[in-house]
Image 1: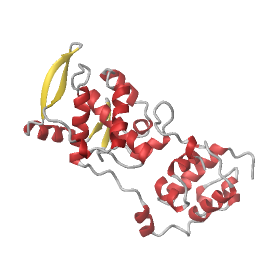
Image 2: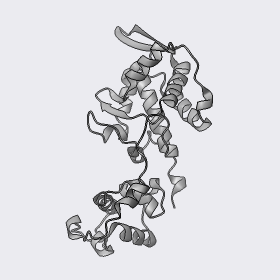
Image 3: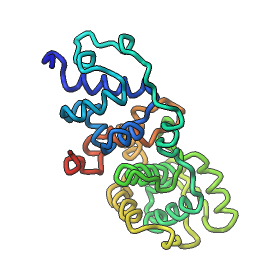
Image 4: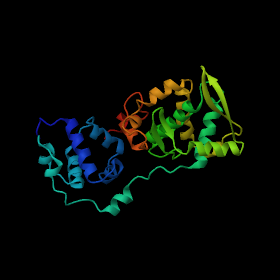
Length: 265
């Protein structure tokens, strides 16, 4: 092995090879029988590869050990005759988030039941509490909580279709929308008129939401927006574009909510 190639460089090369194949981290992790968080740590250069793991990667991604470790590594110098069958990739690929409207409504009501009385909890804070609940749950359990899609906007991540869901709930008299002033600025707030259906929320879901509420529900809109701007999913996304849930696996402290050290193989 060429000692001039760093662990970080090896991780970057594996990530480049994976992307050349059109594979997500979830795809590759399943194909080599590794946890997705472990693969993330390898690509970040935070975890070593053993010989057996390197062998499996070379077979799936189509590279030789010599080529991977070469100081002048280039994707263009590698043969590309062994792309995976497209049907296999599609079969293994993790599903995209799909909004579960009833779950989203009950998560929203649950948060409002606990926070609506706080004068700081307007739309800005509410959006961020929803965002961190959804993305923290995905990091821990690798499953979607509400399935909401979030977009990167100047004031932080915002769930798409939020206005239409809110308008519908207001019309059904499930929510009341009020306009107030908070530190001299106009603020839109929501008051729940019905209780959330707790049978629709698993204990694990409530636990993640409660931790977000305990940590952030007393923050001002400015404070929680600034905090969200340093979270890797928001940082790594393009302005005005959807935020990829997979980016939670690139989080570092204090944003990461999963203990990856216990999962090292």
